[in-house]
Length: 222
Image (cartoon, rainbow, N blue to C red; front, side, top):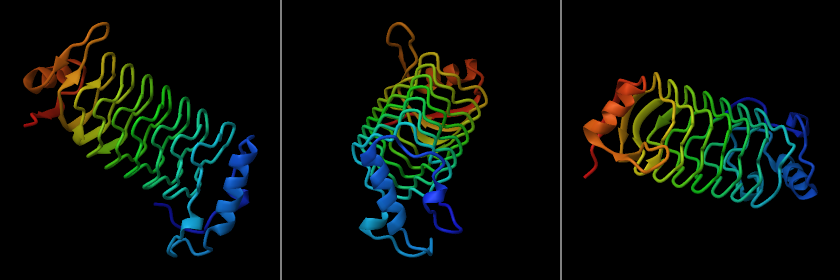
């Protein structure tokens, strides 16, 4: 989580074009306590459920616990933003810039983040079950205890990612780049490209090895 002075309207690099999203941001920033260590109230959490934030630059913004379920965040700049414990369930993050963002304990079930940039982000203990990360960049991310069960990671880039007890049960990873990744995962994983190819245990470990990630260990569930 970020520390330092609380954000203000000047913290917004570019406002969303949608009036509802603009108003929600203004109300949120006004309600934030001047002391960033002060306890948050319901009003001091961004309520952006289902709103359209396209066109916005919210880089580095304090969005702790933001309610963004079902929101349109496609191509929104959230680089370095603090989204700790935020809700992104069913949100659209296609092409969004989340590089270096704090995504710890985020609830992102069913979100869509095709070709999003999450390089260097911290996703520890986040839940992205059934999410769509096709073509997304997750290089050098921290994926400790992240749930990707049933997620689509085809053609995604997980190079140099740190995986520790990462749940990949039935995730689709055909064409996924994993060179340099390390840690422990739980399968089974579908590594097929054109057809389904579910692998687990030794076969899954060999797949990681053959794709440049010999340091990845596989924990067999059950």
